[in-house]
Image (cartoon, rainbow, N blue to C red; front, side, top):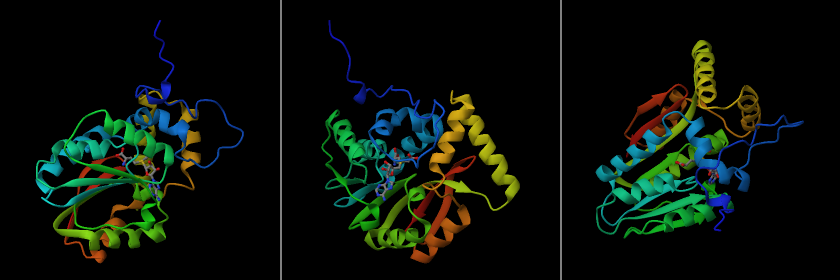
Amino acid sequence: MPHDTDSEHNPAMKDNIFQQPLNKVSDFVFDQSVVRVFPDMIKRSVPGYATIIQMIGILTEQFAQADSTCYDLGCSLGAASLAMREHIHVPGCDIIAIDNSEPMVTDCRENLKKTPSQVEVDVRCTNIEELDIQNASIVVLNFTLQFIAPEQRQNIIETIYKGMLPGGLLILSEKIAFEDPQQEKLNVHMHHTFKRSNGYSELEVSQKRSALDNVLSPEPLKIHQQRIISAGFSSCDVWFQCFNFASMLVLK
Ligand code: GEK
């Protein structure tokens, strides 16, 4: 009898990482146990994630330039790369996908192999703090910059700006903070309510929050916009927001 023991590549694997009470909650890492449940985790944790991925595809049709490269920085399992790949219809346009988690990169490569495409995707295991960007028509930072220490973020945004072609698009999606404490409290509460409505228990929500405390630093939209404009980009605005999750379209 065929028996499916290969749960590692089963996209339907449920995230129960924080289900049991832990004596000590360690800092969150993108290891094999996270990779295994990642599609379920991100769908149940980030409001609007599927919409954002779909729109990355739609935006790619508009912004991918012939003989250029599209970058997916912090690519995880390659959802944004897959969306871009499906919508690149210009000649000579390829994709570079980068993540510094080895298990993510391994499974990302497997995912990309599942569907044939003429568009080449080069998946690299690298730290985006050591970024080399060249000839880019599109750069995607889909919930990745939030994991970089705030003091390193300006440098990364400047490196991206320098490597982008005129008319290029940066898609920056982030968990955000609010300057108004009332808004901060309400939006964090609504996000947690969203997670509870997706089946996470109060314990799971609170243990995950502790695990991310030292690892994920949300900033207010104003800080992102100032950083982007001071790097040289000509325009930046929010095209999607749900509670404390937002995505910006940034034009060179
Ligand atoms: C998606 N964009 O599905 N260098 C490279 N990668 C990094 C670094 C770094 N310094 N720090 C973190 N990462 C994806 C979702 S998830 C978002 C992005 C989330 C990687 C990390 O290994 C992980 O795969 C990804 O950034 C963040 O559209 O889990 O909330």
